[in-house]
Length: 395
Image (cartoon, rainbow, N blue to C red; front, side):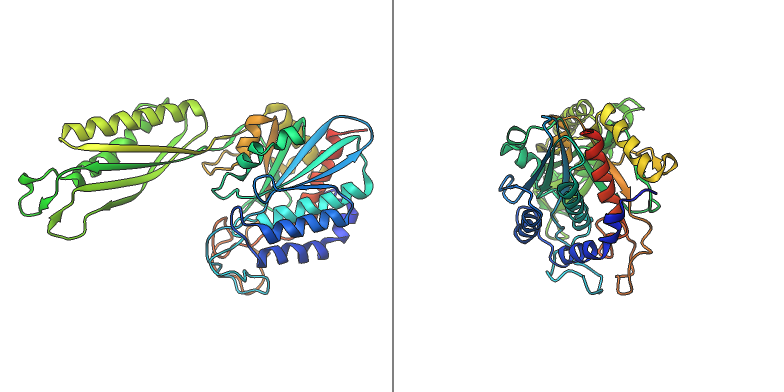
């Protein structure tokens, strides 16, 4: 492993910074303290900054030489609306808020890289350091783009990285093509005619139709998609009725749809709509169908993914750079990859052995109340960012 010695030496300070961020989590579009910390650090190191894109976003600009080439490096800053189970010293001080996905570590790694890049400037061009709000459901990447991210800071490519629990520390994973799914949600309201549960013949009962619909929707995946295509339809909520002796007027279904392509998503939405309408009509009922598209699939461009893999191999050895298995989780870095070529990669977070006494006893998985970012990653992730930028903007 070829870590930058200076970053290794700075690990205690990076840990303190990361743990401070962990103790003070902020939710989407409310990362005011976090943004202040980021802005103060960048300013301290002589890095010009721009604030306010996507409400709380911060962009740092490090320039060297005369080239007009530019690269974007992105870290997310927001936390999750969940209660932390850990009781160690840097546990969340904010009830109901937790850095349960490692965005505190992502921010710290990019800050460490920013300081090194600003100090040494062994490249020719510009590095844009993108500290993004609201990845956890708010679409902060989309909002930064809407506020002119790529117009104000024209870059040739953009790169992102997420820690990945369960992958052995010291490894990376990167691949071209789809690596994370689109995230979408639906709400189906089946309208019937309620009445006495002892006299169902006088009603139009939405409940059995809803049960039938839950099963039928799964045939869209098994019988409408090509077997080699991936898709998920999960009904996660069913709401109906208020009393055991009353057939309700309506039944509400909600859930999520995940795909790796827009074409498959279009097909699933169309089939869900038609299936819902016809199945309900067959029983004399009416349905309202709502479908909301949140995040598109995260699709890495081939050249940039291969470039990232080469840089990773230089840092940790080719044997420690794995193929990035696609996941049905979603990521709003996808909006940036729709606008620019780039690569979204994984850095191994280990299996949880790094957690000190006082963790909640649960697994160290993303969005788990016992999760904690592995601080051993800080010099490694920062080294990757530095070497990636330097290689991309090679003098």
